[in-house]
Image (cartoon, rainbow, N blue to C red; front, side):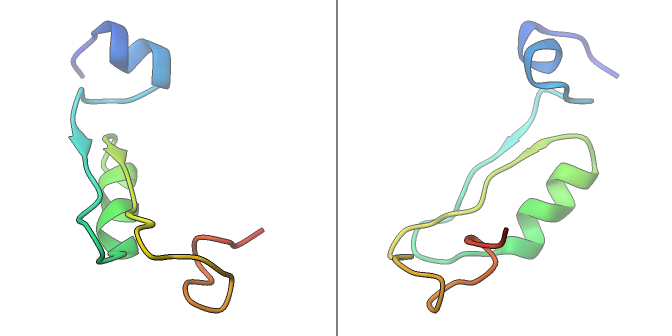
Length: 59
């Protein structure tokens, strides 16, 4: 485990940020990154409603 201001502020295990990839909402990748202790971000480009990407709008 590496301690930095980022890891302490956000509660991460590693100071790694997996960025969203443009118009491709690869939720499995951001979930895997988050489960590994990194910050996983999912792209919401062109996601406008619950119908187009229900995972982003999940309650």
